[in-house]
Length: 238
Image: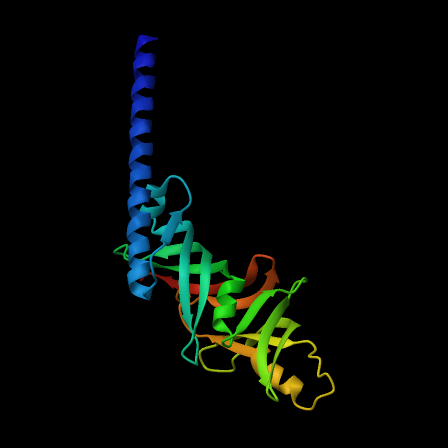
């Protein structure tokens, strides 16, 4: 019994040391991977990586990670007109990550995630003097704008549909499109056109997302506009 007790104590101590070493190793790997992703893709601060699965060391030795979560706060995505569209938060889950031989990066078999554009950031990406808010239903936003027409300042709020459409370019870029459902013309020729020049706009998202990740869908609620992300065979800091 005494020998068995000693054996059990040694097993518990060794198990604790292994768990401690494994947790230290995964924390170190997460920090290094976050730094590499940030440097490789030019992402701003606020990059965080979470490697799932236990034990980590056996996954690392096999060069195969079950799941890697990436979170990035505050990303400015370039648009074709020189303006920026800010994504307040990006969350991506990479699954089936095959690590490089030197552990400098890897390739994920697939990924899915989301990004959030707040209404304040969407307003900043619109025309000057335009504000955007929730439109009361999924896929709807309320756009308020002031226009000069025949010497008068007209301020109007319209319910608009926000959607994601293909940019029809070689990059596979997507366009966030805002179009007013209806604009009161008030019986004056040209009023609707003048208002739509402010309320209707497109913003093509060309860069700033993790490498290989594509926009696939869009929805809206009180918090803002949610973009759905996805992709296959994606490079991860390689």
